[in-house]
Image (cartoon, rainbow, N blue to C red; front, top):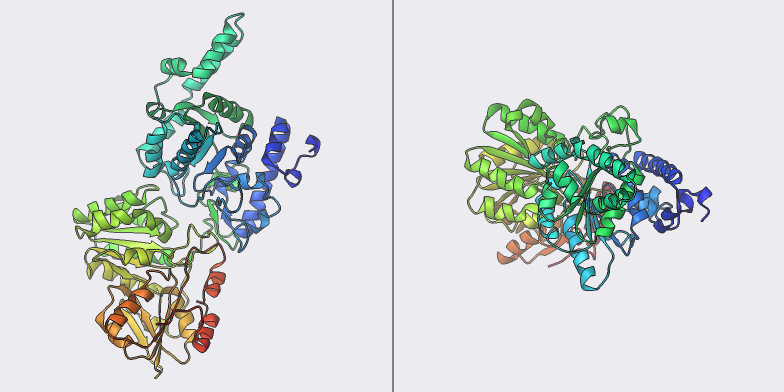
Length: 618
């Protein structure tokens, strides 16, 4: 490749980056940013985090040789530059589209994506495992984990650090420190990182000492090289030991994350040490796009409909998330015991209203869903009524805490399960299809799934005051769709609409509106309280010759299968059809997902007419 003609278009391998000079690298970084901004503004996706890691991605690929060296990007929502540098330039316009490239890292997409990503705080543990495997194979390559300061609020990151520091593997942990997770970082660790970032005394003193030694004849240069290699003696004199060093890492930093030369020097030094090294990099989230630099939170994620200038927060105001947040405020106005908990997702789950009105009762625990559930259980045991708002796919991480810390002791907590069902373009790591099968295994739990905003508020009130133990209210991404007099059928239990037929269509949540539209020759049973299943539901179902169950959730272990088991045990021998997704669901728009898995009105109608071969029949 001719260095004078370097561009993303003719970059065939990340290995070619090592041939470029600094000027060419800086030009390439500008081109990467232009591509990221242009694509995300059109397709949606994560903007601020990716603009902040452009130089870092270039430096990593200049120093290390992927895929022999394993590069693991935590969460993966900061890896767009990495994608552009690893052969996906031509496909980058398909980002987050059905059949296109993912907004996160996927090994099946590229050999340069060393590990699946989508949830936070996993990179260090994964990198340590890969480094250990390479050591056992006699492979001298490195495992490199790139993790943001927001992900460092998750407990798994500390578990990984604790084990990695005492290993002797070729492992490098790069902390991308930009002071900005999805919601503002909280907790002692965030303050600790800020104290390191803000203290330049060590850096200034080190530079002065190295300058003096570099200009001292005969002995200066050798001493300088010793200091650059070990740094421990100088650091112990000029700056206190960091917690990372206490855990067994060599600590390098803080380093300017937008200075490729500095980054490369640090990464090459880390590579030579051949032991666990922690590289602390400071970056600016949203770098190169002024609106995102000023307000990185608003540009963390752009919706799939693209950026809208008249919406400074770039979120969809008419949504179940917002409705839940406002309903919680109305309930909290009447009851001072109600508290709200979020795992670094205040705005995304609509809790900004509660945080503003009742700051003393609002708790952002960072990206720590396990802690959030146990903390909520503690609040409950202290006489409070906690509401933990969390994405369905992130709730998966707290399964043990729901069982052990809340359910066994009947701690009364309410979980608001946001993004329940299909979540669209974020793909398999974010699809909320496993919460129902997961929660149905928990003894004593109550699960609601409203289909309108009014029903949502009623279910929340019911969960607080008419249940005990753990209660969950699940609701989808996006807004409500009011059809067929839905506002007149508000219930926290169920609604049966009769058409005088021997066929029954059953569903819950968002898809109930498609079901009303499709079930012209069926009675319709709308479930709101999913679990425990009331005896009245079983009595109703037993009166029908055919039952069609539609579920925007995993078929395996879902409420459809559960209801079938209960009915069969009570002697039902009619026909029973289940339409629900099975397995992991890739990225696609919400409408595409609903249609593909038989949950659009058109596909439901076809199932009623044809008794689809894809359905399960008793």
